[in-house]
Image 1 (cartoon, rainbow, N blue to C red):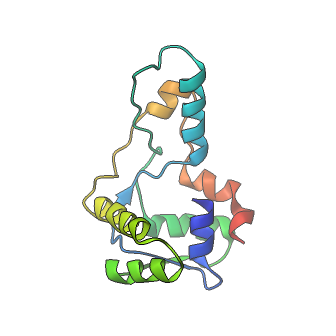
Image 2: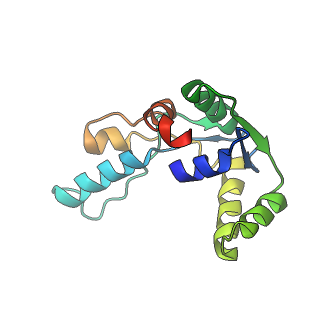
Length: 144
C-alpha cells in the first residue's frame, strides 16, 4: 500500500484509478498482520475465516483528501478508464496477469463489493482497526 500510493502519487500529487465514486473499506497492513499473529499463535482460530476490513469505507477522493491533509500538499485522484490503467501498468512492467487482476479489483470496487465493514480486527486482536487517516499520518514521510 505505501509503495503503491507513493509511486502512483508522483511529484505532481496525482494518483490514477478506474474507480469512480466507489467506497472501499481499505485495511491497514498492520491490522492484517496483527490478526494473523493472533490467529497463528493463539488457540481457537483453527478453521476460522476472518473478513478483515478497515473501520470505514472511503472513496478514493476521500483518501486523496486525507493524504492532502497529512502531507500538506495537493493530492488528487484522476479517474481513468480501465484500458488506460492496464496500459500504464504494462508499461511499468507489470505482468499481464497482475495488471488484469488489479483491473478486476477495481471492477469489484465499482460494484460496491469492497465497501463492507467488519469488526474482525477488534474481535481477534482486541484493538480497533486503524483508519486511513492514521495510516496517512503514520507513513507521511514515505509519501514525501
